[in-house]
Length: 130
Image (cartoon, rainbow, N blue to C red):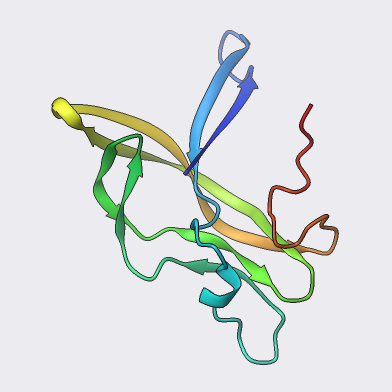
């Protein structure tokens, strides 16, 4: 699971505020192409869903309910798939010591496969680090 941070002034006082949300674009498997079945005659599967509902984990905390997330898929023709549409959901977590917390999370509803990719196997390859 990752963390997305942005600064936004879309509020009643037009103040700059930092917003944080969780994101889960793909499961952390070594070779996702082997585990995702691409339909016969196709070269891409833009999105796929987890096989079963599971609790989400975050820094030693566990979600209070199970989720079956949708992930961005894979291509065998050098394209890369990225989120196209998503919505925000709220996820409640239970932590050690009976501490509870709630996080906003990006929930992917659709993905798009692009032809312009630096490294098709690495969805983060287009990011620029200073």
